[in-house]
Length: 118
Image (cartoon, rainbow, N blue to C red; front, side):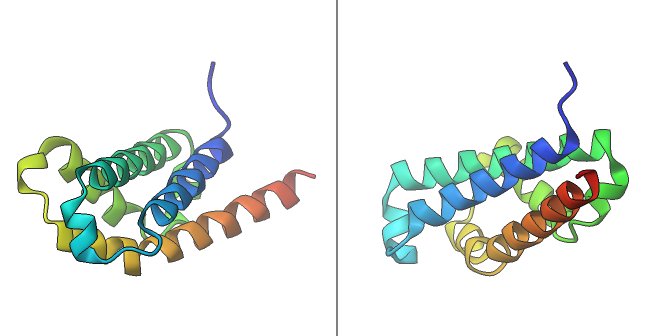
């Protein structure tokens, strides 16, 4: 069964929020020393990337409203296919600078879509 495109936005928000919760109160050094936290964060980024890819398959115009999507999809692909080259500092930088605006934008787009449909 085909999912509603907005469900992929909800997946991005949920996974992004999980990342922020996982790193709340820790430093980059602590992140780098915790395989459990790194694994969790990387898995959630993979979910975000796949959600954005699936969104694009179903609604290219909706995906285009998420300006950070291409960058996050590239990160997700690196985490999946180039795991030996993962740079914790790069991932941490994305968490700090790109993830909050991504979540915020997905919420805005999702809210707008829900208002249009009601």
